[in-house]
Length: 137
Image (cartoon, rainbow, N blue to C red; front, side, top):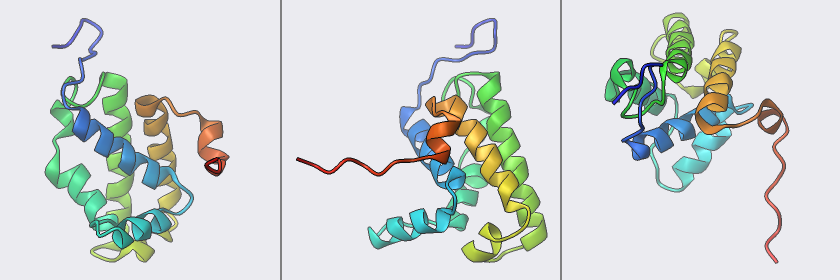
């Protein structure tokens, strides 16, 4: 269901949570450390997974309602996909290092940060100045 403002009611929280996880990785200073940590946990992670998620596994064009809350979130995800596509066109079928070190990568990070702010309510200051988790008592 979509209201008159183009906003939908989220129905697929699992995919939205996965999307926010990818956005956090891509918005980080260097997602390779995130991806390596996930690999050490036995997960499949890296630039290939990012492309599968955004380009193969989900049709974000029809995601308002199921995954995205409205047109603004859709535009932010579309901007990120465009930035990722630009790097892919420049790099080709290569590995994590070639993508993350390419001169176009900062546009991916910026687009992911903007999308993360919208989808997860993150603030730019939290993205830029993450503090370590407190020590357990």
